Image 1 (tube, rainbow, N blue to C red):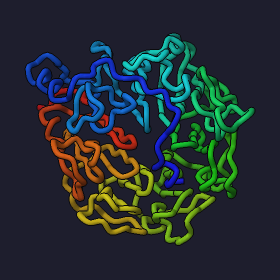
Image 2: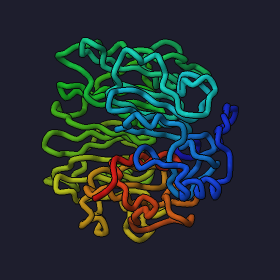
Image 3: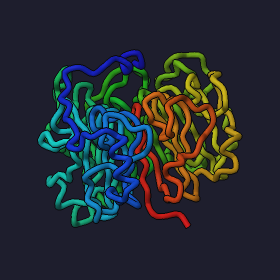
Length: 414
């Protein structure tokens, strides 16, 4: 799976950004006050698909995403490989980037961020971007919630049943029929991997669909599923879920952590040397530790407990575990350099990690060859390093894409 991810994407429509000056010119304009963004979404790293929509094909420093409505207060962002999503405090959806499939970006070929009219009568609650597809939770005026998907359905990742295979896609947001609008049992969280999805319902059940070749669906087989199916091997009290490239995770109310899917780099941390785990397994090394959140990259995992201690394991070739070395770790390791940082939110990609502290300080580490870490120079970082360009700003959250990072800046730090 991961070998395929590293191959270039062919036959893709790439829309050139409307502002195509050099980044040095753009930075000069920013320093002169001609780009005045004290809050909003900032991006760093690869921009070949306009996934961070800044005035260059690559940005080694964070720069404001261009053409977002300055009057919209974006409170949620997510990104994958070639496109990004944002949601405002009023539930308005913004999309930017590019894709082979028109249903992904809904922008009629425009490169700049757009807010699709299709959701004008609904409030977007939660968004996730997969590779060439989106999954969203929307609420109508009656307060009923629906799950929508759009984009690639080649491996069943839109969850609407029907035909799958090369070229199959959903060009207009479609409701996932498994989750009927109900006030009694509704979807509380969604998670998108590269080619699979998870959904958590209010009664603690987890459903999965899409590509299952690495066991990431958790059904005991490598089959793909074009409609959601409940995962039977999980406890009945799941309170949080996560999806990585081809791994999945769930956390119980008591903070027990379960992982499944690809284990090629020991990223599951379950004490097994098997390259694939097709059913959920508890991370016994963290038994007794109450896990609050888990974040899955392509080959590594980062978890945070209730006391804001941070643990990492799996592949560490680029320093994405923040342990000041490149050694692979098959079991959870406490990350000492984050102990005093009071980390509140984390995001992982294939080779890099980003996190934010309670004080609104952003830290990045891991691969930096495309500028995705947001530092002035390129290069890998083996320890968490603060993003100096955003000093004096309050970073609320971060979202890692394949070779880029989004920073959601909320307010000026005091």
